[in-house]
Length: 353
Image (cartoon, rainbow, N blue to C red; front, side, top):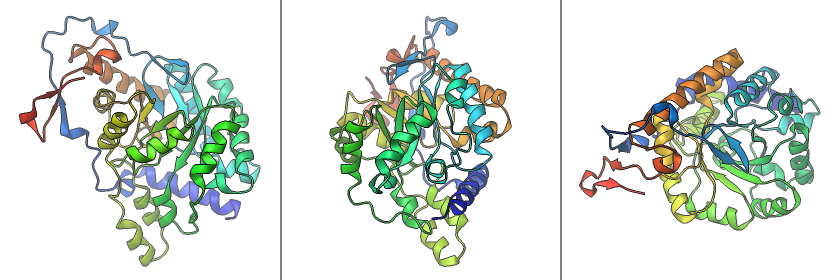
């Protein structure tokens, strides 16, 4: 695909995701199924609740990741600068969007070590598509993706559904697991695997960890549907109908998270995919996430200013803190043991850690 076509596609993606009604599929995240048991006597000071954790050996003040959003369009430079400054100010992690355009075109679109300069103390994650790894330059691109921003780790994103419904999408996915296994040895920094909104199953997650992957972002269904996004981009009715049939496809985020955590009890897990607020974040942590990611929910703020991004995540952090307070959880370890009701099966009682 020509570089100009790639850039146009990234611009289309931004426009569509910014219009929530065009990007959301009919699926649900699954978090509405659960309700915390309210603690009417927390015996805590709200301000003393400890939300700190770490990701890939680096400390975080809150268990949040600004998830991959954009890496190709010219306006991405300002967006990524706002995100980097906000992440540093808040002490949360940042994952940039796909670096494919920058790697293949030679135009960095702001994806440089300026991002590391703006965010020197937080985990910074690069990003490349899994389908690019089986190309002749795949390993070199992966190394350059890390070097060009000074990343602490590299996200390799899995998006087979998006590619299948996309005009000129990557159709050949043979050999990708083997390419990931090779890269895990050759790259020199940890690899994080994420889906882009259709979820990762327990069996796929296990094969990835066996291949040397350091962490998994389940990135489940219930938020942005990339099948719906590609349907919006379709130039003909046939392609649109094909894509829209898959608008609700995927493993709901809550279900993906629980199944992967059960299969891999010690693996660092990131939960993204339709995380609306700090209450959803609290439920995700209770169900097995170490870190919670948001992307589309903060994209509008990221187009405005650094302060708008800070304000957005300040709300999420305050919501998460109150969820801890009202479950009697002094820290994230305690939150993982908080009583949780399955509303679809209330007879089973509370779920305990």
